[in-house]
Length: 533
Image (tube, rainbow, N blue to C red; front, side):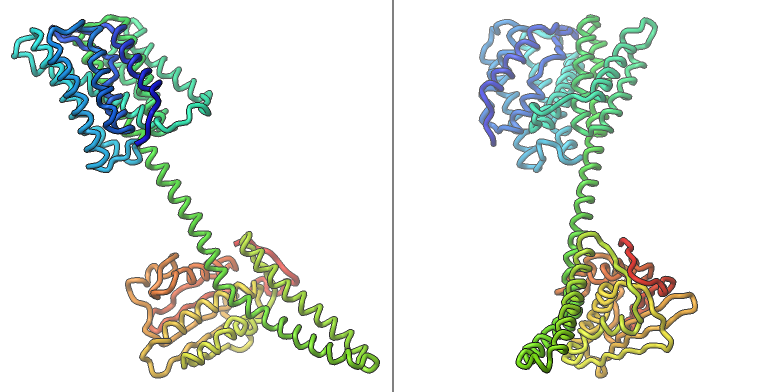
């Protein structure tokens, strides 16, 4: 629990005393009802925020605020005991809320608000019971009217608990030094004032029927600002309503009736504001999860495409090493091998440029999701994707067979990304067959040109197949049947294929058959084209 300044405690006590002194309690029978007294809501809020060590201070304040209305008591013990009982009950309810029920005092969910409402109802019953009992000790009404008196005090206490308590709890952590009112806030405050003027200021209006005009600005504010706006709007409405009731000097029964209406307004505003706040928090969490998922996909893509990068760089780096070794040998006899050495150095420059281009293309994809297209034969694309896995297939005792139809066209595609798709699909097939009991383990890659102008590439294995529990969500992120798998490979592969204008699907679950298509309409384009994922 955090400490609070003595200035806050002093301001709390003085504020309660002043409000109670300037108010004019309405009389229902001989019972004094005051709409301004703050301690029921503030006491519970203080104990929730700062702990039980402030109970003695709150007992003192609760006792002192009764003096302006009732004068010095003749029975000091009963008055002090009443204040002590009230504060201890609030303390017990605060402990039950925070420790027993695990409620967040700042209201992060509808559950927090709902349990606070339950506690507020109980606290109001306890407070009204203590007040009515004290009135009877001072020669109050006959016992026949005790229930009506109890209900009247309960409504008065509950309103203060529901208006003051949430206002303090929700805004306790706000940085008021940086807060600046906006034009919209002034307009919203004006609508509250206008509604109150229409209800009470016009001569021929029915005040009770027109009271529901106050729901309009409250709904607007709650929808725009959530629970923060709803609590502020309820406090402003309650303040304005009490001021008007004091000014009009209405009969106490009328005051209680307006408090009943205010109770309905408070419940509506709090739950509407809390619903809006929860919805926005949920949307923010979903947005953050989407951001995290996109980042995870990028990282997983980096891991998957590292194999393609290694394959792409293997040939130019090997060539660079061979050309460098040959150049050293030519240096021994420059007169004879001078012209040949110049050609070899040109080849070194070409291979270094090729390696740099591969790295540059992959960096573009990771930064901005850019696909760099170039025309390539289908057979060459497939071989680039399958070649890095041939040794792995041999270690597992798996036959890796490529079956290509005749007259396959050239297509426009990002070679590195299509290689990544094949690495994923063929790698999954190898993993499925690795521990399989199948005698003849076989993975087949087939490619054919369809009359619709697309190339269809399929990866088939004779492993155990895809189980029913994962079949429908196999392309969803994090869906995997491998204990060590991340479940991102197929999701990434589908994204890469769709970026090329194709589709990736599970054509058969047993035997497992994944097929993806690539359009051929851009196959005659020269140079490079860019298309965003």
